[in-house]
Image 1 (cartoon, rainbow, N blue to C red):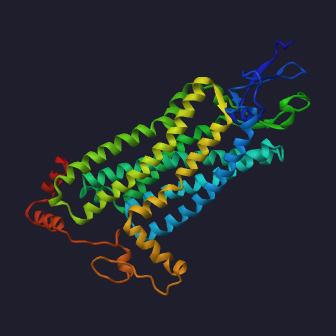
Image 2: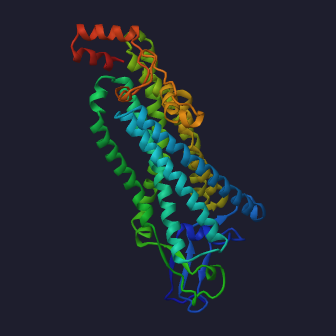
Length: 413
């Protein structure tokens, strides 16, 4: 019989995930048979979506796929950073895309570590305090990378919108130093969004002398909910979940809808488009492919979040599937840059062509100059400089009107 002095401690999310799924599909409660005072209760039900027979095998397969995709994502994002730093020196877009690649590397690395440690703990290879601490940190850093990747994609969408709608003013707003300040503030916001995840659980001793048998007896250390988690965070949790999981997707849709509306309007006035503005528009179209990939992969996570909240059940296969889709999304950007970006392709082969093809010199295509680039060429944000009719027309307009009048053209668009 439960002692009147008993108080219930809520188990952390990952402790409930580690414990064997309940056979009767209810939240498990563990009462110490020794003192009838120590009580632990799971915050959610943990189950296999495909049943206890097929579920464990599917989870292992998903962990292997995450590891393979993560290694691949690490390599391609390192390549992206190398090429972007050479092909778009000093531009706001370069800073943003490099930041995005860094977050994608974080996703790849910490997704691999998370699933490896997850299997080590579940298979009872090692359940020491050190392993559980490292697992906790890697899972949180993976979450930081996921949040950072999505919100940086939103920031790039905003940057593309400003550059397309206000091409001249954006050069001032998004100058090299100002863009770095903007990114720093944005990164601070990303960190603030993730701070609550670091405060909701703490690792404690299970007190095995009070639980000599049962599921908890297999775990010398467990995660339990903190006072913050069971107190003020119960009121903040819906807002926090909305900001971290749900809000980014409609923001991506809104900014990209506005962006393509502006592109449509500018395309009706091609005669005043400069070569640089045209390239900025093409870069915006290219980035739309990345937005589609982000939206597709993270929508799956939102669906799982809704299922988890409505059923109060954590399905192991779905958790690993989300990690797989997010990790897969982190590998996409390099191929989008390569396929749609002529400048990116040219710089990639200029940097790696000699080693890959065994050439003494890779011919770097420059439309106007027809020669390999020197250091001054590398300062340009693109290697294709085409003085088009639109650019000549805009130069003519600049000579005939003041800068404020030209800005009026932008605002009317």
